Length: 166
Image 1 (cartoon, rainbow, N blue to C red):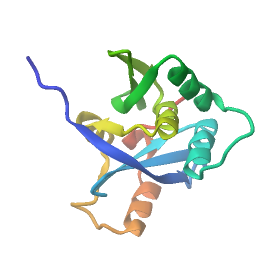
Image 2 (image 1 turned 30 degrees about the vertical axis):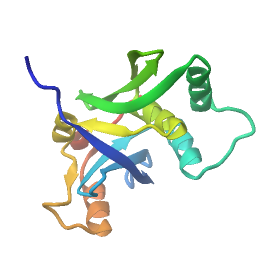
Image 3 (image 1 turned 180 degrees about the horizontal axis):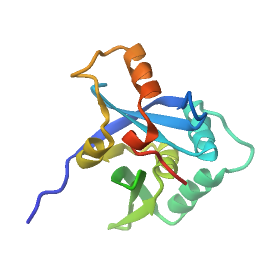
Image 4 (image 1 turned 135 degrees about the horizontal axis):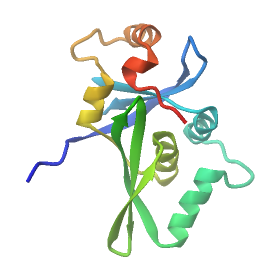
């Protein structure tokens, strides 16, 4: 029986635009701020994440608000989201939901899972093998200031990190 991969708890460090392609990137970091994982996402998903990060209320529920509300009304609770795989330069995520004692995992794009996690105040995890495949920035072994991270993000190509594709 093989052990389950280690889940690294992450937080959203911020959103930025890729300086060469103008594609949004969500930056995840571990709680010790030693590992950073950039994920290229779509404009609409970046907007959904930004709205919640900036605590902006919309007059009507957005898609991720609707999903959160539907889960709550059906008695479900999002326990966590996990960035679970990286294949062919595409990240994959799982939304973990508990409903009446039953645990369910739902396949999702990482950007949608992150937007939902923000709305449900659920923790975000990345599996260690995903961080390894994506060559996440380990600041424990590199310079630890924001300029080094910015320079690294500007120099590395999306193919080297696992560009998120819609």
